[in-house]
Length: 262
Image 1: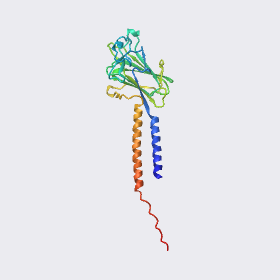
Image 2: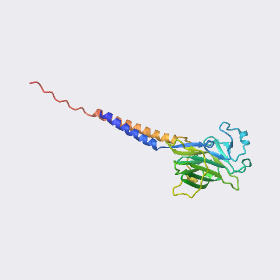
Image 3: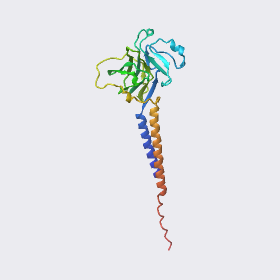
């Protein structure tokens, strides 16, 4: 009975621990460059997932944004631009993404070298943060986002005197595990004076670029939970084994001596 009570208490504690770890876990959602949630202006054309490798389709694309095949890209394609084109009416290439998220991580490519303007805007409260960076850094991080309001990310190509290119590989969206509606339709960003607390655009130096692990939605959260469960099961097994051995080694109480009949 003593052993059973100890086992019940131990498993109850482990269940509470796993529940707390699950509640606190964040989830990473990887949007490939062709994801429908990413809005390109002007619209991208060229290769599609169903016709990857069809060079004739890419040749007739006259948009500022083109989808090209890339073997080292996360999803096998890159959406790339080298600036405005006549076929797109001279529009400056931009992209938009509206989310309810904790953080955003934009990944470019090693060949990307264009300067871009990054704008992060929220509507309630109204906040706008702008920054300029060179896309050759491969990663730009947008952190400290308020998940309870809609954040719109805007990236605009900056024209240069020399030919440059901007490649979009993927965008990683970090949300809490209870966020059931992370994506919304983009809206026009508003501008105003920045309040005290604002999102932060983190531009890493070349020596501080984050490593791309290729993980998709929920992979990191699943790894954390798997490690916790494995550790908990091993600890529980060792604890129960020790209790069982101690129980078996405990000496039996001496029997009372029987008195002889007179």
